[in-house]
Length: 375
Image (cartoon, rainbow, N blue to C red; front, side, top):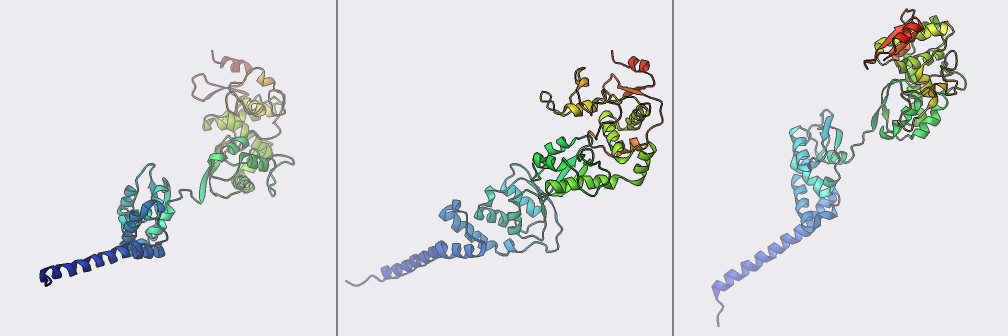
């Protein structure tokens, strides 16, 4: 029987097509993933076989969009990823904000590498001079190289230490307190045997994340020294105080004054009492002596009881005449200036007003002081 010419014409192209299809599939299975791996590194195993083929092909298609920055002269700026924001949303914003040329290239690269599941919310410094790959890797770590560290006016050194665990610095409270138990060398305003209490200058600091406890202490004390100007020294001297004594009194004024405008008047009261040989009778000095109140979870027990006022300590100015042996907290520049340049008054007493405003009533005599008591 003769071959059917029609059958022959159909059968041969079909076999060829199948062969071509098999070759294409082999290329898809082998060549495309291999080339992508050689160029961009291995894919995430979680993609699976078809996912690897799919995203390998996408990356080869994007090619230059992944490695070429949008603008080599681009300026660095802040880019914020919100908590719970999707990869697609981040990709769209990167493109719309002119940081990458292709949001889809960014998204496909993240998924190919498995970085889509580890992208972190946070603030980042990004630039159009970075490639898609650079930005994708940058968004895996929201931890900046520098941290902002704040010391508040009126903090004692234990409160500075307590803020460290959430500061981003790799310093434990114990390490800092061990360093602050003495003082850095080269500063003449410390007294032999004193701690660094009172000289941890209240301010906002930008610090390297790897700052050590000793370096942090040096930074805080050096900042105090920079603020200790000649006019402050002269002002302390006019009040009969050396620098260390001036800081002691400023630390008490800092803790007593709720309203900064009252600091010069409060300083005048204490200076008047010192000059008259009277006890300072300052509650914050007793609070400092008592230390941490477990029930109130504070270093500053409030209110103080009658028994508290009898707490035996050289810092208790209800029991001892003159200044306590050291500062009780870190005063800011306004408290330091209040002691160097106090108001001129004849007051010997002050007491908080009864309206909760934080203001005080001042008095010359004890009788007037009693009359200012709250009902």
